[in-house]
Length: 198
Image (cartoon, rainbow, N blue to C red; front, side, top):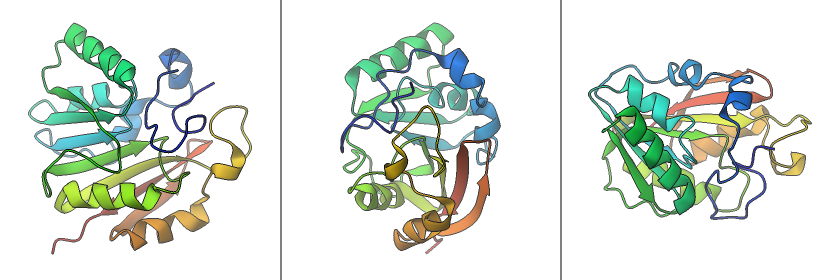
């Protein structure tokens, strides 16, 4: 079972149980998702709740002239991510242990924020989104990959999920403009949003 956003409590923003990357790739290839919002190879991307690097490592490969700030609260997950990055020779990945609601990053310092299969199920979701907005540069983009509000044999409990009908309002209240919201691949949907230019 994937533990990234359903079976740990508030403030536990990691993926310590991710042992089956091949199984997860049968649901989707991370590169396909990342192509939705990585347009420039020199961008700085913060992967919040990065786990062991399912998205962070492919993002680092795509950002050949940029950087990936891989943020998670679980040190074990970050250690595994860092080891994988070293094995692949990816020098543009920085592992950062932090809570998503209190990022140790300067304001207006990143171009892209990714939150994949994470967030929005817990009371601190508004603080997490406000932190994402704070660290993004004006015009920077937020990309969410969310479990849809449909029954599945894996993932977070159904009661904690947020459906596509509610997500836009949550993101907009945090100060973002929603650019696109689209379903798939099942059981996920995606949201692309932007911090205002001014």
